[in-house]
Amino acid sequence: MSELIDARRSIRKYQTDKPVTKEQLDQLLTAAMLAPSARNLRPWEFIAITRRDTINGIAKALPNAGMCVTATAVIVIVAVPQAELPEGYLPQDCGAAAQNILLEAVSMGLGTCWCGVYPNADRIEALRKLLGIPEPNIPFNVIAVGYPDEAPDRRGFFDGAKVSYIE
Image 1 (cartoon, one colour):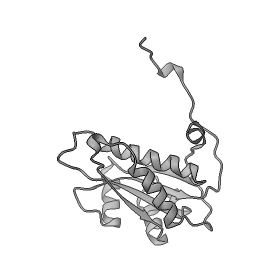
Image 2 (cartoon, helix red, strand yellow):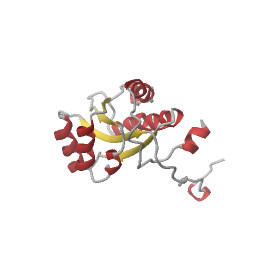
Image 3 (tube, helix red, strand yellow):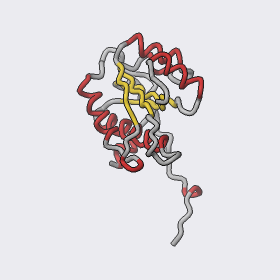
């Protein structure tokens, strides 16, 4: 697992001639649905997109999703509010599902880039309109997926100054 975490990068350029298959998307979504969630309510739905005009529409609608123009697939995580869900847990649950997608993608030789949507009202509304997402559901994020056409350097690192130990 440490190798996957270490190898994960935000990829912003993809090989446009190598499509992501439905089977690969299903594998990524299986990983997402194995994520932990508060009270195991699984307050999410997923939209897997390979249609080029829709992917380009996402790239145009969201100021942080320009890399989608070369991605061959996009996954949108949709948060589904539920009365039984303790307040404040929706973003945590959807974030855990997103992280599982990112790590599973690395294990498959795919690259990804997480593009935030929630809590920005303009981005939420743009995706609702583009993808027909009904209220009260909330487009949480967009994950560009494809075969990497770049190899960015690692940017994360351990910073002991941000850690307190209680022994």
